[in-house]
Amino acid sequence: MSERDTSVADWWHTDIIDMAPGEIRLRGYPIEDLIGTVGFSDMIWLMTRGSLPTAAQARLLESALVAAVDHGPQAPSIATARMAVTCGLGLNGALASAVNLLDDVHGGAGEQAVTLFHWIDEAVATGQPLAKATEQMMLRWQSEHGKFIPGFGHRFHKPTDPRAPRLLALVEEARAAGTVAGNFAQIARALQTALNTQKGHVVPMNIDGATAVIYAELGFAPALARGLFCLSRSVGVVAHAWEQMSQGGRNKGPTPPAHRWTYTGRDPIGSPARAVATPQNSESDAHHRGASRS
Image (tube, rainbow, N blue to C red):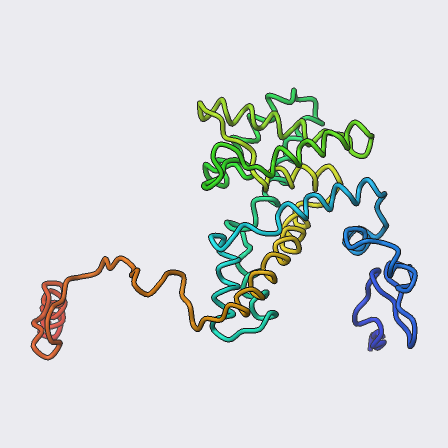
């Protein structure tokens, strides 16, 4: 018989945490040395990347996290958290319900934008001019994923998402200070130009695009961009869920009871006991009768 590894300790293995009675080390750092010494943004970086950021990197990361904490009850994740509370869920249930909505359509655009930025960056690395690479990768994205370019345009904030210009200004400051290279900011600007040309009007960058620039500049993988957005939005979710607990309310739906949905089915057809066969049913019955005679 072949030898098998029967060590229970090897069932899970991780570089993140080591523990013994009275001892906790995160990425090699004793927890007591981290507590009161580093900030939450530093800890996010340490846990996801394996090392501590510089102070400038942590500040830039924190700016992106702060910018996306909340977008009001019109955001499905926030509305869901508030409705969950009125249905009797606690903060943990409200948070879980809200985060589960942060998928491709509501919450995934940051990850998608980082992915698209990387496509363009890789094309430029092969020797293509930035403008050409941007146009080609934008068309590739639209052919594979649909007409919407992630990170641009906003259904509510017109003409400008107020969060994006501030974040981009901070990226430029970080580039000037040598904290980031600025390559992905340049790619985002090229994408903005190509998209404006394609649409024939300005399609401004939104929060997802601006935070994607920061996450890409700081070296976070595309999938982590979505995870970071979930962390950020969770702050707003908890705040709204807690506020709803304080306000009260029971079993609140997405709209007030007086505002009903639009019914698009058939008109009333009377009592089922007196209902006659529909033409569709008549054809079906005839088919079966014919089949039984054959």
